[in-house]
Image (cartoon, rainbow, N blue to C red; front, side, top):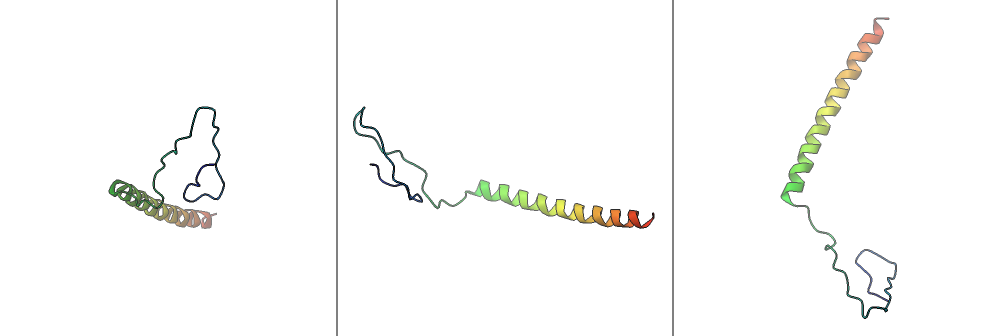
Length: 69
């Protein structure tokens, strides 16, 4: 039986046919995003805001168009 990894509740097991298992190293839990991740998120948020603004304008234009008929 292996040690539990952070954030998991299930027990882990390894076979013993090739000797003692080596614990796999995983990325630390709770690592903060890097500055490149923050830049990417900022660009995505700006693009989302622009798309929402365009959608709002299109809905208004479509509403005006429907009133003509």
